[in-house]
Image (spheres, rainbow, N blue to C red):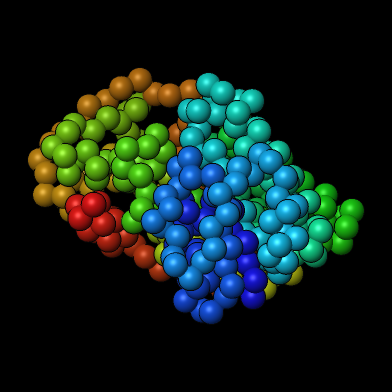
Length: 301
């Protein structure tokens, strides 16, 4: 299969690209390298340095993809609150550009949406048909992207797939970035620095390991359209997450608590049963095991 992966030099994208290459696909990576790294792209894949805010038609004409996996994004909730226009330019206009490129070649789109920011506060594990009540521009932009995919399906008969990802973590996540609390905690613990917890630490998230997410993305390539949660169904508090990171790092540093940030949820957890039934997806990696694998990568980097 010929596949274009936007954001393929980044955290999740590079793992997806590796899996596609390993199974023998022809892979083209579209990345502006603002966050992604050239060295994350395997030699067997072709890198096209390009910003998704600009049309991808020429790349689509050159590569004739059968599928486009759209992972390029502005992924920081805080940035979206501070700069909503920038967030929308990347996450909404970028998605429209991917859809137009796919339409020109008849390719299927697999879109990385967000389960962690699209439902709002969760009283129970959120299902795909639950109300979508994002509390940030980031979640709203991802919801707009989903609606564009659905509209292209109605207008053009496309069978695109949206994956509502939980809080993804794992090797290659940037420990110096603004998003990705597991990598941030482990990076600071490696360097002997105190970690910050915003709020009381009781807020919960559905942390899903990047290797499991890759399996869902590959399964979605042959799905007949739809929207699917990609998570574990298990919620972990930030305090418990920090303790797991501290244990694996062998640190006795206590965190400091700071004021809660606007736009962030108190409770977020996904019901992955639809993806289990339709895609055969299971998030098999326990949080403790995934943190240990992430620590090995961060410690060596």
